[in-house]
Image (cartoon, rainbow, N blue to C red; front, top):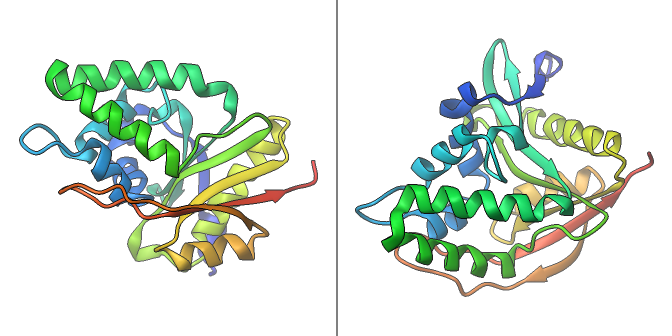
Length: 212
């Protein structure tokens, strides 16, 4: 735990793609693979890399922060509100079409919309925490807590105090971490979404109201 104060959080840049994309993917690999993995065309991480480097939208570098330990990116995450919905949708459509082409893009978009029924985008008044990833070899050392604390701090700075995230029912360790930070389960969405690339687990929504 003594190393944790050395984690420095900053806004992500396009140059962070190689380090940040695997961390983002690790936050929900089954869902990402279900939506974005197209055999013979692209892996999910290849699309996420393109979208991150592009900068725009939910998966772009402008929507993320990273945490560095001794100059190495070891954590990544995002925090955003409902006002991003239109811009994120337009950016995703453009990125998907450019990456997959006319043949495969419609299928990717449809699968993405299906996942939104299990993991709904934020509604008005929420500050939504997403894509929370920590380097596997450093998990359990407090970096995840520090990442969430930083995203909450930025959310409060943006004028929001209703912090929201979703956690897979298959990830009790993450749910326990969020519970320790004051998040409470407010709902659960079952999932039957699956293909050869991934099976999307059910998700629980958790919320925490913080003092501004």
